[in-house]
Amino acid sequence: MIGEISDQGGQGHARPCDIGDGEALSKLIEDVVSDHGRLDILVNNAGITRDGLLLRMSDEDFDDVIRVNLRSCMVACRAAARPMMRAKYGRIINIGSVSGITGNPGQANYATAKAGLIGLTKTIAKELGPKGVTANVIAPGFIQTDMTEVLGDMIKNEVVPRIPLRRIGQPEDIAAATSYLASEQAGYVTGQVLVVDGGMAS
Ligand SMILES: NC(=O)c1ccc[n+]([C@@H]2O[C@H](COP(=O)([O-])OP(=O)(O)OC[C@H]3O[C@@H](n4cnc5c(N)ncnc54)[C@H](O)[C@@H]3O)[C@@H](O)[C@H]2O)c1
Image (cartoon, rainbow, N blue to C red; front, side, top):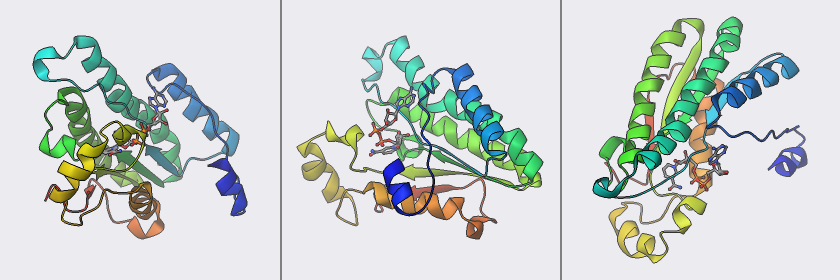
């Protein structure tokens, strides 16, 4: 990814961090701000699944998914809020899921985290809006990544026929929506959930 940025004349830096570790994540954001002097855009994208039906779901699998998929976003937004408010500018984009809107069997933990992300983002939009900071959620449907690779032929046989646009989404579909919400043009859009799912959950 850094190579692609350099190829197009930009500069990219990658910093590894376990986002489940709140202290490390806060420090990462503080370091970025102190190294670059500002933070314009925060995209909270990393996430995990630990699927299992409710009756068999362990407390640990529930807590892990909430910590990595939800608490990390609160921690990152909290660390980003001050520099963004100071600059009177910021774009926060949290990657949710249609599971957080519709629910999904086997995903009590994941759907809860992604639903929580909507409440978190709408709250941040209200708290930081007066300081020029927008906060929105993108809710993808099925996107072709490592996360959905494990589902194998089930996607082709059972999911695609239920998608009005008759294809699984590509990472580029989410990148385009993210790029819009991160842009100057989206300056009057905040507290929204942009569903990018080929029409599946409509
Ligand atoms: N793929 C889909 O169909 C789909 C659908 C809806 C929502 N989403 C959401 O999109 C986002 C991206 O998912 P994806 O499909 O690319 O998944 P993925 O499994 O392909 O990639 C997830 C990334 O998160 C990173 N990650 C996981 N735990 C981490 C941690 N503790 N600290 C730091 N990094 C960590 C992984 O290293 C990996 O790079 C996630 O928030 C996911 O919930 C994906």
